[in-house]
Image 1: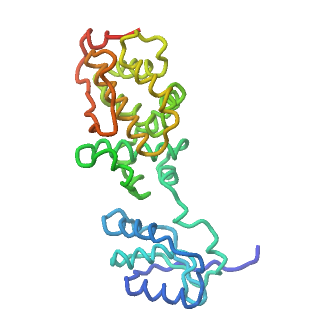
Image 2: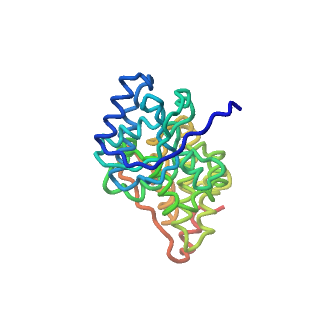
Image 3: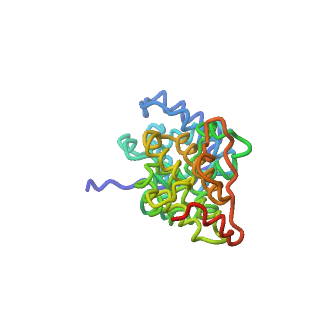
Length: 297
């Protein structure tokens, strides 16, 4: 240990004009030579203007002996972009080498859900939070092909998990089973397990039976609509990746669920790129024998 004294932290409100002065001083002194990620700064600014920013952020702004910024550069740019004053903890006289420690920019959505207590498969859980939320909130307003353009900040991801999808991580084992049996993407697998189970809240065994049939199609009756979906995944689904692939897989399985619940046979469950995302058919009471019996092993 060098015996250096840690800098004291002081609380201060930084105005947009004050942020501009700090950024100008940083440029003049050359205290932060690495480039600015403008997209990241804009995402932070969106948080600041839409109520998703918490001023009680424990990560301080770090200023060097010149008064330049060595940590917190993107937050100051966000203050300028948002034109909203923000309170920060500030450490002064920090050595320039501190800029190399991990910064908020390096945090991911997986880190955000980890803070909420998700211990494993955090990347998959975060992506599934986005997919489920897009299905529930944007299905009518935005065609699913446009979901790829919808972005979420880490703060939004954490708040959605906490407020609306707290039990989503419980479905990770079923996600793993679906991935193994179908080759579906992790976000689609977790979203499918969650949404189908929620739709079958009136009779949970129906969801388990439906999903088990997707995973192990060899036991199905030849007329079961899950045969076609299982074959589709084996032929094409494993090669697809990304949010659009996950959305397409989700729509395909929901279409199959609706057909299965209605007692329909094979050949009626195709979901293409031009089709609207289907409404998920729920179970409010025990389904009829015909609906559950069609194509059951």
